[in-house]
Image 1: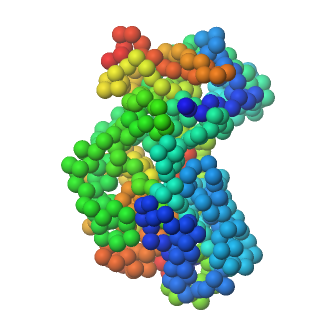
Image 2: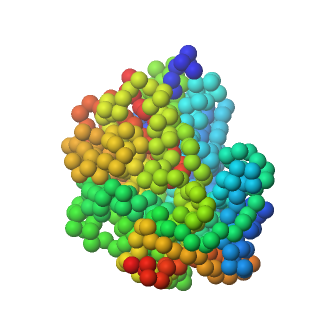
Image 3: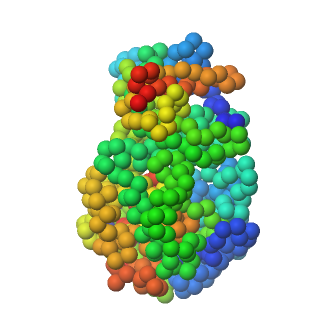
Length: 391
Length: 135
């Protein structure tokens, strides 16, 4: 493997995301693709691979309205390789398989995408992201949760948060610090959906969703799309921006495919995948300049911080309280506002932001010359970790 | 209406044991490993002799959440969802609603016992707070 040049990211793009846009998913996607291509200095003719997560899915409203076929057709792409990955290292799976595709010569430039229309697809009684919603029967791992009334991932994340509160003395204030910090970043990012400042008082007064998680611990369903272009190292030299090298990836999973059986629910798949990633690089956690950590629920952020070794087990609450992840901190997390305040682009938005930071294109929230970024996607038993370095 | 589990060779004993009031957990007959969710194969010793048997039906709350959001029409809230370490089945947790406890007072470490509610052709387990331990 060491003989192969590492895969790179050469472009990222995001559509004008919003709530209730009532705009077809393919128009969001085309906008994100064109922005990514423009940033990379490529054209649609240069794209010879395409990858997505999870592929077109009808089971939850607006969760994944587009498959690779539709996007290839709509954008007029001539591809040599394509893949949709519903079952892999979380939302990061398509980026990882694209990296493997360019490293093994299957493609030169792979367009990786994620499109969602959860905001405008939801109606009363037809809510997005509900396990088994509307079905009389359900199989697989979700059946063990949905059939007993645990329909929402907020319930499953709530179990983890409650256990962290119990074992470590974590409190709602610690989670509130994450929500407040991400909103501060969002207020510096015109693309973020939430633009109104959020105070700790606002957070503490919010209604409960699934204890100890309140409304502001949950990410925001949106309509939008994001594209990440993964390129072969030699092909990347032709692009407009300095390539961002995928220094290491981790996708290990050492527990069962379910949310409640992992022996220690103060850890999750993130811990396995992050350890796997660090085993493949000489870079150390203290060298990280910017982080994109999955925040479908706020509790995932401290769990990812611990998984990545930025602090010890049970210490993330103090790490956060010291201001490390907030604007001005040593380890800024989700500088675009994350999913809590930027909108739920299922991990792709977090990676998009890390890349903008590494290219110095993050506008009012730009950090001082970051060179090493990390992205951790997924919660519960699914997780993918990726270490990025600007050449 | 909650979706019901699709019955399979692996899970039928679990979802129907409630007809007899029994919490059925799969155990390996060769190495005694408890396997949950149930499988036909033992992941520890690779035996194919895995079969369900009744456990005491008591346990200890490992963690919980109080759900306040009515996710589907007609859902009564709030209710408690508890992840429970099952007595006699090391490493196995059975997750379901917890009744008979005050959502404000439920706590990790609380002792609970199983009951069942029939729904169609399955019996959904429900944890009950032990009397005198309802906190």
